[in-house]
Length: 293
Image (cartoon, rainbow, N blue to C red):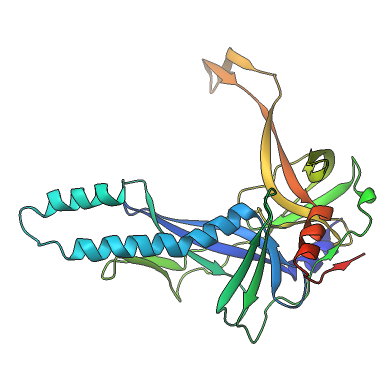
């Protein structure tokens, strides 16, 4: 059903790989998605994804300042006490995220700057990449022109990168830093997910998002919602959880030959996608070229 559409959309949809490190030393991979709207290096993603990108430099600089002060502490009997005081000063706990590194996979040969525009009310952002001489995406989105075609029951698909399988990163103890490496697996698989339009969500007296019968998975945020022709209807940004009310409490069942009691509180997980008209409005506001059909 969506075989050709996925191949078409894959040409302009890309993953954002992220590694985060806590003060306790735990390094965790994560992912998100963006897609390009023209051949000029302009993409859209979620505002909450942009926030992670925007906060990285400030967070890394904050940790670098802590590290510089820590390295000046004398390595004597008072070191642990002074280090604890320094951690209190910087409000660092074991679980505090202290470093973030992002990588825009298979996008450009070089990125010198990213100009960003965050929507004031919607979970939507524009990224304008600067300084590249070669781009590695080979197409761009075509948006739905007549949004009245987006109706309940319409069968659509999303594409994104919800399962971060990449491991081309490491903690470098000599620098007390996390960084990308030239070894390991640099990729994560793209993952399509189909569903039908169930409802629409309004905001400020206009349609804001499209609700889908299936969830948007973590990492698919910023990925396009499209039909079987690859025409973009929206952008995945949120999953909500609807309590079904079919609760089971302490029900006795037989499992592996033994009686046991189980409880279950089921929810329906539904994805929300920023409406195509709101994406186009935001692009128009910033005088950004896009195609529609």
